[in-house]
Amino acid sequence: MRRAPDLDALAPDTRAPDTPAAETPAVADDQVVRRRLRTVGGWALTLAAAALVLGALLSPNQVSSLGPAAFLRLPLEALIAVAVLRLLPRRPRTVLAAVLGVLLGVLLIVKLVDMGFYQTLSRSFDLVLDWPFFGDAYNFVKGNAGTAAAWGAIAGVLLLAVAVLAAMAASMIRLTGFVVRHDRASVRTVAVLTVIWVLIAGTGLRADPGGPVAAWSTARMAADKVRQVNEGLADSREFAELAANDAFRDVPPEQLLTGLRGKDVFVTFIESYGRTAVEGYDYTAAVTAALDAGQERLSAQGFDARSGWLTSPTAGGGSWLAHSTFQSGLWIENQERYRNLVSTEHTTLTGAFQRADWRTVGVMPALTYAWPEQHFYGFDQVYDSETIGYEGEHFTWVVVPDQFSYSVLQRRELGDARRGGPVMAEIDTLSSHTPWTKLPTMVDWDAVGDGTIFTPQARAGVPTRELWSNSDRVRAAYRQSIEYSIEALTSWISTYGDENTVLVFLGDHQPAPIITGENATRDVPITVVAKDPAVLDRISSWGWTPGLTPAPDAPVWRMDAFRDRFLTAFSDLQ
Image 1 (cartoon, one colour):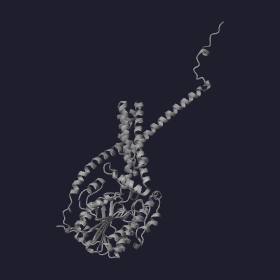
Image 2 (cartoon, helix red, strand yellow; image 1 turned 135 degrees about the vertical axis):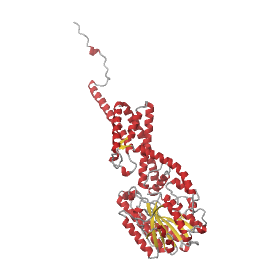
Image 3 (cartoon, one colour; image 1 turned 180 degrees about the vertical axis):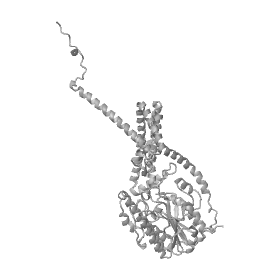
Image 4 (cartoon, one colour; image 1 turned 90 degrees about the vertical axis):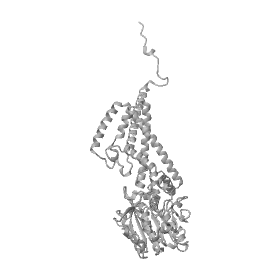
């Protein structure tokens, strides 16, 4: 009997020639592992994309609102986006998802910039008017860390911005694909979450400090920014009308400032000298003690003083906005207004003194570039960072000690150097400028010279990172800087002032929120000092407090009110 052929033996061998049959299960296992890893990796990427998108939607724009509670909320924007995207065809859906991702990335970047502005200027970033501040930030970093660090910071910021936009667009595209693949579950989930959102919104439940649990904060912020842009574009027209109304433009020079004829008038801005320096904080006792000591110093030489409050248009920085507001009598709260102002012939305080035949001087060591505004303000002479003649080592950035600034004015414009007639000077001091890491101390006035005596003090400072790692130490350094500024100013006036000396000194703005906390008042102290009682008699109706420290209930004016009140008090207007 013939045996039936072995069909298995006759079947072709489909295995690879060099692959043992025993390895086939291993290959299968490896493929399973790879599939599982791809699945796990896909879920991980999807979850990461969801976390990124939700984080961008729920993140606040102020550091004080950051915390776990801020992210334990339900964003309405996400529910609307899912509902819209799932209804579109594939290609339009992908394009819209990418566009929404980029827009969300832009909003996240704006939120981060807002955080920085709130921490430094106590307000949000204006998309139309605040771009010049980035140039000032570059100059500040360059002055403190060098050109390479400044350019490195710019490159890092740009790369981070591009990365955020790309990651947000990719995340939205991935989440959109996930929603479409799980369409039925997505519809049910969105429907349930929408009902939950409405119910929670009705209760007003909050997850402080993050805000309402039923959240739509990003949409509201976007609407606010759009409104801000529209207001910014309209602001130039409104400001032009205000600037054209100048009550002192046509006042004859012989009627201006008659109550100060023959007097040397000094206007000193003390950097970051705010209301919180003298009222309500743990460091204010030391500052008021310095003011009391200054009052005794001045009183011993026959000087008297009156003090009140002004509300600054800025906080934490932007000193020139305060200076221009004080000088012009117009509210200069942004860079666009400042640029428009200095292109006009609006009367400034300095300009009024110049018209009335005072020699007008600016001591402004922070100026490191050509300053065409000199003509607008009406300064005959400006001592900037180049012409002030400081040969010592700077106290960070271009900071020269206040005592040196006063010494330069005394040696070059007053005393034996006087060029005839009275002097009106604006002195913009810097010793109390952030970061407060290198603080000067007083030296004998005769030893100031070219400033080299201050070099050992400048080299003895604390590194910025070390100081700013502890908010208590930062506040202590700030307090010391204000004490020094007050001592330098009152020492100068008590040493060199006479019966023809009139001093107006004030803060330009509050310090940064690391000192004051967020949402602090924008009030700053202002004081008028004189030896001639007739000068203070002219402002007796103002109701200001006797001495260098204004009482808590002393009058509070907006800073733009001062020019008109001052010129009216000391001029003979008919």
